[in-house]
Structure formats: structure tokens, C-alpha cells
Image (cartoon, rainbow, N blue to C red; front, top):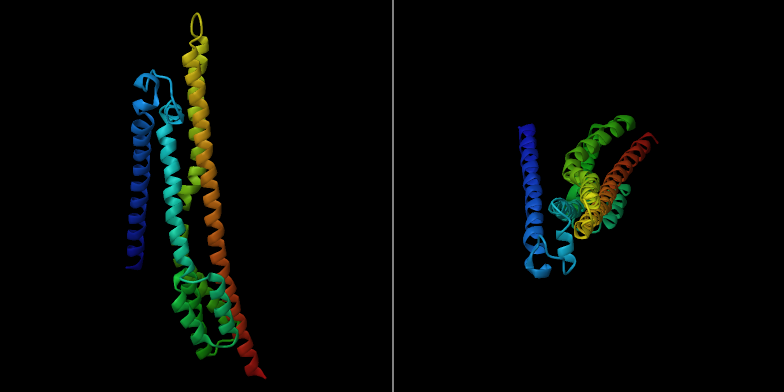
Length: 272
């Protein structure tokens, strides 16, 4: 039943992500066609033949790849906002640093119930994993495991609790990492398309078509700038969230080590 529920949640999450991707591309197209392509942005009100009067008109002249790049840019923004809220929630209600200091202090003092209560108040992925380890600590303490058996059991419990939390934290990060490459490749495709038009204008019989030449170069540069901007934003957000997840994972491991060391001290005191 648990696997069925997990698979169902994964499929639903994938469907939602797919809808967001399609919606972003659609919104990008609408912005390009009706916002940037509005007649007020061009000389004579003609978006196809008129000269751009502003930046919006210039970007519109970037060609067919622009709405796709705009869609990618919107994807980075939407998925970054979504990850920010999810990872912030995973950190818990209060300061993660204060929580770790409090829970580690309670563990070292042997106040396991107090540490569990702190986890209940904090909530979030870190608190859930630490609480699971503390409950397992009480179980191995009651059963009188030796230090090595207890260490293995507690670490296994932490790994299982972490494995349940990590998929939620890492969800959609793959999309952000993919957009890093796609943004650059999309910009490169637009650049190549623009340069083809530019060289086509140069190769035309008689006097080169200066308007076509300028349009081709403009298309190339606009797509390059848009693609680089998308990739740069995706890189920054991906690294930011990866760092946040690493911090959460480190906090869980740190708490686990404290719990194991506390149990070893407890077992050592019994031998005296």
C-alpha cells in the first residue's frame, strides 16, 4: 500500500510539473506574440516589416525561439519559488541553527523526551528524522543493545527517515539543472538561426538587404542574451537549493552522531 501511495504521489507530481512546463511555454508565447509583438512597439504599427521602436519590439524580432526561451525563463522562476517554499518548510518553523543547538543540548544531557518535544514544535524534515532517531534511541536503550549494535540501528533509522524526506526536497531540481543546458542550447539555436538570415542577406544578389542583415544579427544577439540569462538564473537557483539541502542533510547526520555518542557514554557508565 505504501509503494502504491508513493507511486501515485510521484505520478501526480510529474503530471503537475508537466502542466507547469506547458503553461510556462504558453505564457511565454502569449507575452511574445501579444505583448512584444504589439503594433505600438513598431514603426508604422507593422510587427513584421516595421522597425522596432523599443526593447520589446527588438526582442520580438528575435524570432520563433524567443517564446520558447521566455517559457524556460518562466519555468526557472516558477520552480525556484516552489522549491523555496518546500525547502523552507522542511527546515521547520523556527531557526534551524537554534533547533540543532537545543536538541543537541538536550540529547547530551540525557533529556530525550525534551528533545522529542523540541522536534514536535520545530516540525519539518530535519525534525522528523531526528525524532525518528530519538525514538529508536529509546528502544535500543530499553533493550540494552551494545554500543555497536545501537550505533548501527540508530544510523539505519536515520537513513530510512532521511530517504523518505529527500525525494520531496530534491523534486524538480532535475528540471532546474536541465534548464541550465537547455537555456544555453536554445540561445545557441536562435543565434544560428539569426546568423543564417544575416549571411543570407549578405549573399543576396546585387546590393545586400541591410534590413534583413540587421534583423538577422539582432535575432542572433537577442537569443544569445535570453538563453544566457535563463541558464545563469537556473545555475544560481540550482546551486542555492542544492546547498540548502546539503545543510539539512548535514544537520540530520550531526544530530545522529550526537545521539550515537550519547548512547555510547550511557553504555560506558554502566560498565563502571
